[in-house]
Amino acid sequence: MVFSEFDHVILLAHGSTDPLWKVPFEMIYESIVSESGREKCSLAYMELSEPSLESTIEKMDESVKRVAVLPLFFSVGRHLRHDVPSMIKAMQKENLTIELLPPIGDDARIRQAMVEIVKGHLGETR
Image (cartoon, rainbow, N blue to C red):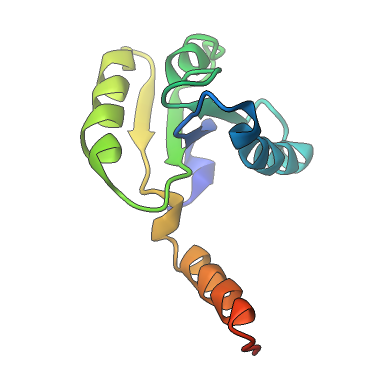
């Protein structure tokens, strides 16, 4: 999938009541927007944290017509099979298309990075 087909990409994390839990996601987001700009990317949380996915969509400029929601989840579970699609369906507008992308954990590069980290802890290197 080529992200340029979207006007905006929302990075979606689960959310937590613990503010420290958000720090890695905010660091990822800040790295992205430092290069790509805030007009092309947002960070939102599914629950328990702000900004919510709903509030992020509500604040979108009317010029945004195609939005991708990229879950920063490791795999598809109940939230990505049921909860998030229901949320997105409720937020669809006549002039706004919202597409749920596969979770970032489906990307082979993420899985390979995890393999390399585990190998490093086992004392194995490339």
